Image (cartoon, rainbow, N blue to C red):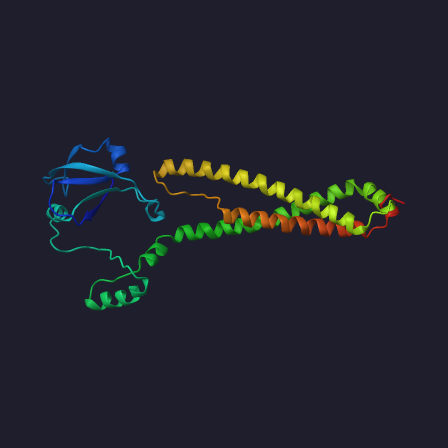
Length: 266
């Protein structure tokens, strides 16, 4: 039996009702208005309560690996159910001004011995170490991919230029300047790079959709595991243009420095 995480809502009075998360509702076949028995232990007696709401899970990376159900109830009901008295294991405090967080932490930690206050951002960082490692790993893969793409683009340009040695030689003999030939080669390389970046963006969007569809179904979470943002597209297109210009300039400079007759093989 999976553990149940109980979250208290500081509400008083009214009908005994609870809110459950959508994962528990789906697995147990429950809906709004159903009545269930809620107990602190399997052997103890419980209270009959009504399901008043079904709560959707948030996109929190820290909750992905947790196979636990979540039930929300009134604070007084929780106290009576678990017999914990006026004690709590942890509680959250929201501030309206970020400038007072440091002072609030100091005052809470100095109030008594035996508990410790932490920033919510620090807790999020500690619980997201795995995702940070994965992010660095993806960044390294991205750098390797960019380098490999640059080499591949340079090889393509070398092959295409080698096929056009006679055409370039004819243009040079007709009086076309070196600058014009070099500009045409750079422009062609840039267009090839842009075409490749467009295909890569479309492929990345399709793969992101497949990854999100699969893992959101597996973990039953709205969290997106792969995203293609405008910033990523801007960086990829910018890198493609730079690599295209550099590759075209390297190959073109090598070609225009060669005498036309040498390009004809004479």
